[in-house]
Image (cartoon, rainbow, N blue to C red; front, side, top):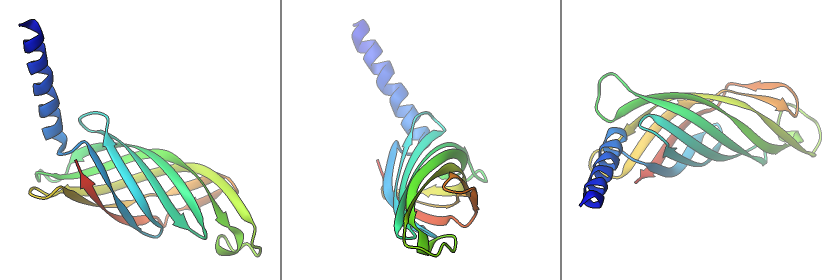
Length: 156
């Protein structure tokens, strides 16, 4: 009987937590200054980790972010978020920073993010708009503030 009660309480807690955040994981596409894939996963009621893979300047970039979610404007299913993380990637010289050669360069750095997200009621999708400034630490100290992107994700 105790196992049944514990199981019921555990299921109730998981259900309440899932309802508070509208979804557990979202996978989708990111379009903007750079284009790619995005995966978000809740690790708490309002804490999220996000992985982003993008292409730009004939290279690629892997970004990992930790984010905090808050309800926006007291509108159900509309949230704003902010966070920080890091990136690692590469680019081809002739396409980035006015470098005049065709060599492959490596970089890593730190990122910030701020944005808004809306989770639809009757379909398992959400949309978001965010700004993700970054600073390359290795590969030349280079700030980048042009990462504005729109994402659409399948959520489950």
